[in-house]
Image 1 (cartoon, rainbow, N blue to C red):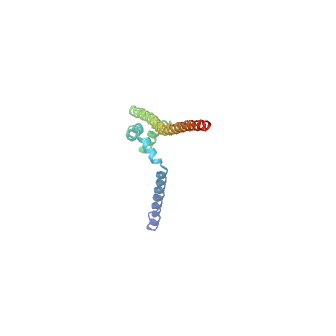
Image 2: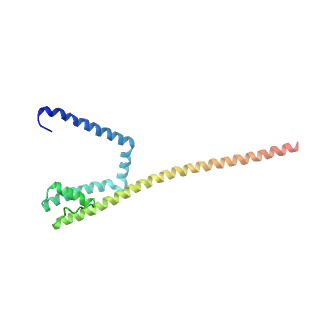
Image 3: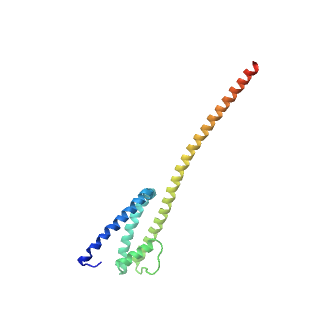
Length: 170
C-alpha cells in the first residue's frame, strides 16, 4: 500500500477483515467444533506434544539455518516439510548436525501424526461408549416397562378368569 497520506483511508479496510474473522469464529463456536477440538487436544496429552514439537521445529529450523548457511525462511520450509514427512528432496542437509536435526524432526513428525490419530480415535470411541451407555439405559427402561405390562396382563387374565367362574356359578 502506498505510504502517501491520501491512501491512509484504505487502511480502515483491515478492520473489516478482522470483523469477518471474528464472525467466522462465532460460527465455529456455535457449531461446537472448538469444544470438540479442545477435547481432542487434551486427549492423550496431544496438546503438550504439539507444544514440544513446535518448539523442536523452531529450534531445528534455526539450527539448520546456522549449520547449512541457508536463509531462515528456507530453513523453516525445510523443517516443516521434514517434520510432516513430506520431504520434497529439493533441500537436504549436508552436514552431520543438519542430518541429526532432520532425524529428530522426522521422529517428532511421526510421533505427532501417530498421537493425533490415536487422540481422534480415542475421542470417538469415548463418545460412542457414552451413546452406548445411554442406549443401554433406554433399553433397560423399555424392558422394565414390558415386564410391568406383562405383569398387569397376567393380573387381568386371572381377574377375568375369576369373574368367569363367578358368572358360571350363578
